[in-house]
Structures are given as structure tokens and as C-alpha cells.
Image 1 (cartoon, each protein chain N blue to C red):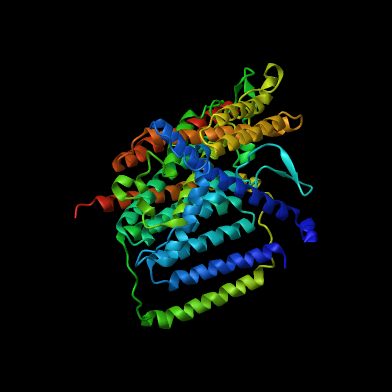
Image 2: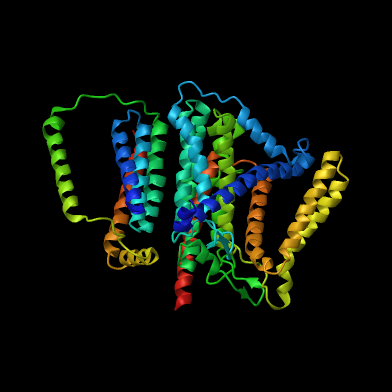
Length: 165
Length: 408
């Protein structure tokens, strides 16, 4: 086994373990921490593919900003441990078969398509440039629309927070 | 074993570099605390550490041993795992940031393998640094939460809010530099600042066209102080209100780890300020023509230190000091002589100027601590959001405009 494959399996294992732990943990802070582990492991996977910029952005934006806010809010509200509930009938009859089906489908697609690991791009410095060019030329409109969407969300949050109760 | 090293030279060399840098870093951290106490003491007309060793030089060692042997209680009802994880997280993140800092332009040879004065030369070096600092919040926030105690919780909450706010302006403030350099690679950012204006004014980003990054540097350095939770932004550990803030419940070596993480962050942030705005390892003097003598500034500085140390050592009050200080002076004199040797002269320039600039920033940190009172919380937030962030944004707009105009 070559080094990239070993690193891939370590990172993938960490990501899956983190995801399972995210669901199993009873305390919100621990769940949030598990999610951070998943995100950092994903960033490692992106690095393995040579997508340095995406990896860095993944850590800065998701692990470093969004999750900090999650943790901050959990700490501020002082949320306690969750109580376990029985699995609802809806989830049991519909959810489980559906998720099993989805997993089968994913496994089939991955098994058919992916053959080994190949870096998506060879020179990442160039890749960063290419990505930026695409964002500001071909995808300028969707990019700006996304920004406006986020702005609207922020405005909504401010309005909700300022509303007289 | 030797087969393995021959097959994986990069791995072996990296391990050696990591070990050496860790050792240097730990020593630097220890003596940074000594330096800070001495300088603050001088500002406040006190002596500072004076008992352990001549001029208190062995004080860091004594402190380290003390931290190792103190009792280490865990508060009742604390989340044990996270309580233990937090200091490790803080320390590991603070130390890994230093891996991408380049200390000099020249290459050295280890095990017959040429390698730069830097552990990892990443294309996204700058982004990597910001990724690491953005994770740094967790150490403080989780420590505050996991301690199950009111003051640490308040400290942790404050610091998360503060670090999120100032991280924004810190990241925005360096965009100007990135626009001018066109790369995230730290080595390339430095090499693009080479050259002199009119033959003697260095073309560092702080002074260089198209737009001198004065605003960028101001915003960067102020936010950096806030990011490292130092005076006047040390609200997370404001001792007059919160006992010791997020690390109130930590004792022994876990406390020491937070302490070291804070100082390591100070060093990283100073290194970054040096290489983004002050030309990194580049000498402030041109080394050609009438300025050729500046190559021997390192020698002169070390020689002056040696003489001072020797004279002071001979008159020191204890016998131990009268022996140790002159011996130390001889060692520094030896260093001065080595720095003047042909071949070594050129090599020493990079690290010498880099470390001198970093040292100046560290002194500035200590100076601030000895001078300024703490901000109030609302002042802190208003300062970050209403002054620094708009300034950083204006800097981005102006710089991109100037870059566009100058490239026409």
C-alpha cells in the first residue's frame, strides 16, 4: 500500500468515527466537537486530492468560524444533556429502508466509478488561480447571488433579534 | 534504519528539523517569560526575577520544575475529556503554526539533503496559518466551558466572541499584502519585497508601492494583540473581574500549557507581522557599495552584548554570577566571531534580521503590557467592528484599485 492510500484510510476512518460520534454523543458540545473532527478530516482528504485552497477554506470557514459560533451558542444557552427518545414510527418504517437504499446506491456508484486515488490537479498554485478566475468570470452571477442570499439571511436574523416581544 | 533514511530523506530531515525547532521554540518561550518579567519590572521600577541564578536567568527553569510538581486537581462536575483536551489543543495548535514560518533564504544541508530554514514550504502557507489561528479559539472556549465554574465560563464566552470579531479584521488586513504579492506562499511574499528605493529605502510592503500597507499593518497588529488575548485586550483573563478567566480551574502543567500556548502565539503573530509587512529576512540596508559594512552588523551586535555582559559579570554581587556571566560573555563573543567568518556572514544575515524584527515586536508586546490599561468590553467590541473592520475593508478596496492602476 502506498502512503496516500494509508493516509486516505486513516482520514476516512476518523471522519466516519467522528460522524458516528456526532450522532451517538448525548451532550451538544461533544456532538459539536465530533462535527469539527469530521470537518478537519475532510480537509485532510481535500489536501490529499491536491485541493489546497478548498482544504484551507474548509478549515477556516467551517471548523474555524461556523463551528465556533455553534459552540459559542451552546455555551451561552448552557444546553444540557439530551434525553433519548424512542425511534418514531415514521423513521422506523420509512427512514431506515430509505437510508439503507441510499447507502447501497452510493456504494454501487463508488464501486463502479472510482478506481484508485488520483490527484484532481497537479499544480495547486495554478488550481487556486483557475478557481478564482472561474468564480469571478463564468460563475460571477451565481457567486454574487449566493452573497445576496447570505446577506438576506443576516438581515432576517437581525430583524428577528430586534423584534419587540 | 539507514536504508529507511536513504529512501525517505524528506521525512528524516523533517523530523530532525521539527525536533531542533521544538527545542529552540521551548527555550524561546521560557526566556520570553523571563524577558517579559524583567522589562515590565524595569517599567515599574522593580527588579523582577533576581534570586534564581544571575539576573534571574535560571528562573524559567525553576518555574518549569515547579509546574511539573504542583498538585493537579480536577474540579468536580467537570467534563473530564474536554477538560484534558483543551490545554493540549491550545498548545498543539500554537506550536504547529510555527512550522510554515521561513527563517532565512539560504538552504542548509542535513544528511546530504538540501533543505530550507522552514519545516513546510506550503503554497497556501498564509491560509494554513489563518486556519490554525481560527482553530485556536477552541482551546480557550472549551477550557472555559469544561471547567464547570462560573468565571472560566464567562472568560471562555468572552474570548470566543472577541476572537471571532478580531479574526475577521486580522484576515481582512492581510488581503492587501496578498493582492500585492499575488501568492499565499510565505517565501514568495518575502522575496517580492526585495530591492531598495533610491538605493537605501527598503521596498517592504509597509512602504512599497502601489499602496504602502500602513493601514493594513495597523489593523493587523492591533487585531493580532486581541487574537493572542494580550493587554490591552486580555478580557478573557481579566484578573480584576474574572480571577484568571478561562484558566482559573487549571493548575500545574495544564496551566503551563495555556501559558506556553499564549507565548507561542505571540511569537507566531510577530513572525507573521515581520514577513508580511517588514520584509521577513531581508536586511533593512542594501549590502552593496557603500553599505557593504552592514553585513557585519550581527557581529557588532553580538560583540557589544559580549562586552556588556563581561563587564557586568565581573562586578556581579554573587560568586556564581561572577563565574557564569563572563563565561556566557565568552560564548556570545565566540558567536560574534563565527558570524564574521566568510561564508557564514551571508548565511547569518537572513535569520539575524528576521529574529531581530520578531524580537522588536515581542518587545512592543511587553511594552504595551507595562503601559496600557485594559479595554472595557463594549469598547473592545466597538473598536473591532466599527473601526478596525471598516479600515481593513477600505484597505482592501484601495489596494486592489492601486494594484489595478499600476498594472495598466
